[in-house]
Structure formats: C-alpha cells, structure tokens
Length: 451
Image 1: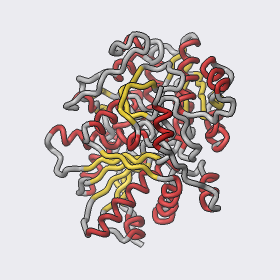
Image 2: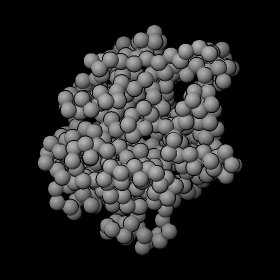
Image 3: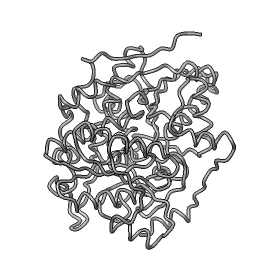
Image 4: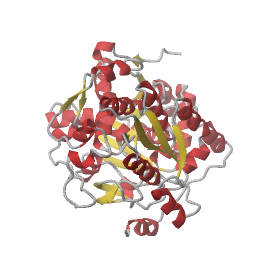
C-alpha cells in the first residue's frame, strides 16, 4: 500500500489575514435592507444584535484583507493547518484518471470547520465586554464549536438546536452541555417567536429559520448579550477563508492546481471558505486554469438549484435584515434529512450574487446518494464523513466518473467539512435500508415562496 500523501503548513504559514472577496467582486452583492425602513443596512443597524467589529466586517466591500487578531491566530495554531490529502484510495475505487484532493477540516477539536468562525466571533464579543452569547444550530457542529469557543473566553452560551436534530443527535447536545452551554430544542415555548410558531404548527420539527428567530430574540431581550451565527452572513464566510488560503499553498506543495472546487452547501460558509481564495485568482487574472466551482446541496432543500433570487428574511419570524438571496421562502420547512447543517431555506448574499453572475454552479444530491458516497469514501479513505460532507463527496464522485468516461485527467479539490462519528445513527439507518429520499414538487416551492 502506498503512503498517503498529506500536505501540512508550519505555524508561520498559517494565514495572518482573512480574504474579503467582496472587495474584488465586479458586481457587488446588493445591500441587505433594514426590515423596518427597507433602506440599505448600516453597521449601526446591526449593533444591537452582533459585536460591532463583526457588523463592520459584514458590510465591508472595500478591504481585500482583514487582519486576524493575534489571540485568534494563536488559537488557530492549536489545530491548524488542517491537512490537504490526496484521496488515492477513492481514485482507485473509482478507477478514475482524476486527481482528487480533500481539505480535512474534520481534525479540529470539534470535528468540523465551524470552529474557524466560532473563535473570532466569541473573541470580538469578549473584547466588547459582552458576557452572554446566543446562537442556533442544525446538526450541532456550529453549536458545539460556539459552546467551546464561549468556554475559552469565559462567556455564557445559549444554543437553540433544531428540534429534529436535538432528537436525532443527542451526543452533539451533550458536547454543547459539556462545555457549559444551555441547549433548547427549537421551536420552544421560551420565546415569543417560538410560541407563535408552535401555536400555528403544534408539531413543528424545527428548522434553522425557527432556531435563528429564537436566538435573535433572546439576544435582543437579554442585557449584555449578542447573537452569533454559524453560516449565511458574509463575516462568517470571511473567517472561513483560512481553509482556502491554506489549500492554495498546499496545492502548490502538491504541484497541482484545481480544475474543480467542490463543497457542500447549507448557507455558504464552508463553500465560500474553500472557494473564495481560488476565485481571487480569477479576479487577479493569475488563475492558471478556468476552475469550476460547484456547491452541492440536498435535493430536499434546493435553494440554489430551484429557489428564486429575491429579498427574504434569514429567519422564520422575520426578525433579521432582508437579504438578497436565492431562497425557498423563509417559511419553508425542510424535510428531516440527517444532513441537519444543510436544512436552511436561503443562501448567503455573496454566493447568491456569484451564482446569479454564473461564476459558480450548484447541484442537488438525494439523501441516499449522499450516504452511498460517504460510505464509499469511508471504505476507501478510512474517514467516516459527516452527512453534510457526503454531499460534496457525491458531487466529487460524479465529476471523477465523468473523467473516467472522457479520459480527462482533471484535478478535483473538495472540502471534507467534518467527520461523522457522532452521526452513526444515520449510517445505521442507511445500512439497514431505512433511509429514504424526499421529493419536493414545484408546487411545494411555489407555496413556500408566495409570502
């Protein structure tokens, strides 16, 4: 057996700046709107919700590089750089001439890429004198990361976890509680937003939209408390660019450059984190290849492939700013797939504009296809991927099989956003034949968009 090819950076090569793609974009994203006035949002509009520095980062369309605070970078060194790995086992299993690489974000202390933004968000809150932070979480990767980051800075954390994931993934709940976070299944009776949702839909199983509503409400009604977010917004994607900036250097070490960059897609943070630094080469005119960028989303929550581009709320209750996004409607209730981190109705404003401008692509993946891909990857590479990451693997397999058919020797890079060791109940159900695909009709989408 040949030795696995892994590429790592030393501490001095870990990025010192995050990359802000908004500064380079030819067509800037349309402005988020204040929901009360319908006027373009200002940083001051967001101050009651987020730490002030995060508000400034969110709307910054001029500075290409945002310095990573020394305290954050020191914490990054605990687990970064993450390995870039040549997936020779998967290549062999597929019989493809393609060269497949993956950025292994599963090696972080929390097992996913989410910690890359949880640490700076907690840091900026602490620097501002905040004592309490709130958030939402789907599958629990973000909630676990935020709970850990809060403990690092001595902050109290309250997490609203989507109810179906709260029930499906009890060990993620346990991780959050181990780090001292208060975890509540959403929708709940602890907020006005939750009460209203349950009154209208007593058996509501929750969505990221419902959990965001409750977390935002709690932040706005609790003294010295701020809200933090795990995806969708631009400052979260900004923090995640450490992934692509590292991968850029590691691909140079491997002597190759990607023809195709792939990541799973919920709100857009891990996709943007890997893709945006490589898109930078296109804006600079230095890209050696016309790289394709592919976002892989669940077929049961297809905001990129079947949604509409319009202004919409980021949450179900309508407490957030209006965002220009590809959306299925903020009242959309996604099916209970196990990839809980991808069950979100809308896409971030940056990714939405890039898709609108045809600078990236999107594919939708059925649940059974995603688990088949994840199982194949586990047997070929020895890593059990998170259900979310399985979507990126499935899209990678499709592209690698095309190479097998055409004989093209393309270089494919995908993001392994997290491991699935706390998702084994989902694999149990898949292996037992108890998982199903969920179909979404055009009429279902029209109904969810009508408001």
